[in-house]
Structure formats: C-alpha cells, structure tokens
Length: 163
Image (tube, helix red, strand yellow):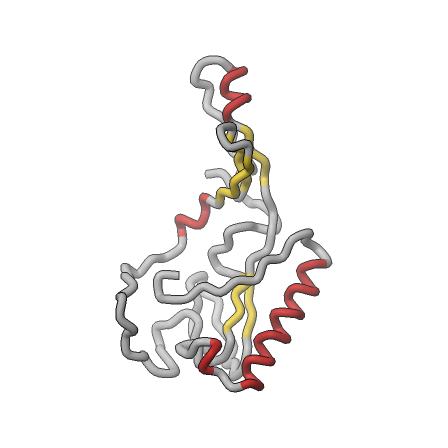
C-alpha cells in the first residue's frame, strides 16, 4: 500500500492529496443524527479521547485536566514513511499515456489532535473564557512549533462521533 502522497489531476491541472492509510481508521458504525443527542457525560470509559483511557493505537492518555495534544493515531500525513512512497502507475498500455495521466509525489507531514479539555463532550462555545484562552494558546504553540519543520500548518476542528 502506498503512503501519503499527492496526485496530479490531468483534467483540472490541480494536485490532490491522497492518504490511503486513513482507511485503516476504526469506524464504530456511528451515524450522525439530525437532532442534538443527549450528552453522554464528562467521562466515558470506552472513549479513546478521555483522560486515562487507551487510545485507538494502544497508547494511554495521561490523566489530563485541561487541554491535551498528541500525535494523531491515524494521521493523513506521516513525518517519515514506513510504507511505499508515491504509488506507481500500472502498465496498462502506452508508458507515455500512463506517465502523462498518472503523476504522484510522496507527501510528508504531522497530524496532531488537540483536546480542548478533559470534558470533550463540551463544544468550544461551552467552555469558560479561561478554558478558551488555553485552547487558543495551545493552538498558537502548536503552529509555532510545527512551522519550524513544516511550510504549511492548518488548524481545524472535527466534530461528531463519525470523526
């Protein structure tokens, strides 16, 4: 299986990121409901984000009480590939056509998860001003740290069980 890479779309002239290893992420069959479900509470012994629990890769979270950051167990990009780099086109006729239509380059990167608080059942809007400040300060620290090694750093939020 190929590792993270980008492929050239000959029709649009754009490069697209591809992370085939992400298909290995566990999916627990969750389907997002349109209505807001009742909250599960502040601690779930089966949740891989809760303080003190085992994560999907077997690592154990510390008993954190505020913000907490860790390397994503199923990242879209890898800092060093242990897998094959960019996939190579299969020979399906003319090598010139394959080379023109299938262009790929290996991609490297780091993906981290930032838990806003030990109560990750709460959204950012439900946190106190001090807790929001801690989240923003940790975002800024992560951007500063990652910018030393990587040209582009993207901060975003995933919400919901399906993430």
